Image 1 (cartoon, chains in turn cyan, purple):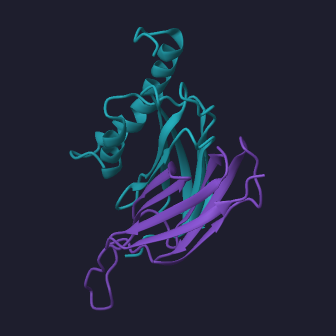
Image 2 (cartoon, helix red, strand yellow):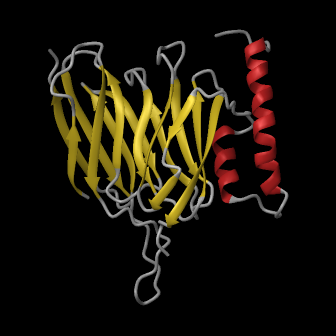
Image 3 (cartoon, rainbow over the protein chains, first blue to last red):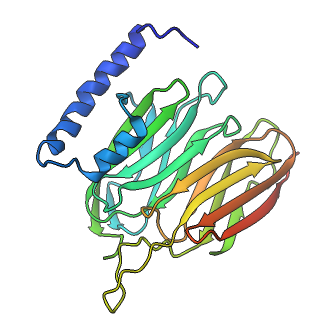
Length: 155
Length: 106
């Protein structure tokens, strides 16, 4: 394990994450007293960590989903998946679904590649968040807007 | 919860990173809907999926109501040697479906 001292890379990533996440989290939370459910879901995953948005986490999903009941996606991190450097888990959160958690994928050293595909439901047009949990305790985050023509989730 | 289907490559070499694709039939009832009489329809989803190879865990997924009906899951494995996959799906009622499939390692 490396020393906990703040090396340049960590600092740059951390600073970028603060800049990226502050307007996102601050803007919507201040509009109402209780934070939205997706922020709670995000907080349960990352705790006090500041996720980095450095582009290593990629999230393929359509920009426009005609059917919100079935939106295909692939999410992954370019990682060697070795003992020293690997991705432990990837989480998906749909910010405007009544229940924002979508899935958690847990990888192992046998995975070889930190990538998974599935299909998700979107109740309406919204942003979908991907979060990758690295073995060194850091998080990566990506946020993708999806326009939904016919919403999923029923109701 | 029926008819699990799994697709593996026809053959693989040790060290290859292969894609594993799975799908199973399940309503994935979200718990948000109401029936014709206005009564809530209870949540009933597959909440977990596990894949092991030769007894070692490869990949696991925790699923929530945001996953579509008939959940499709694809993931990867670096082939450690010959062996057999075992896939397990578990739903809210505790029902489990297991499927085994041998990987043709050449």
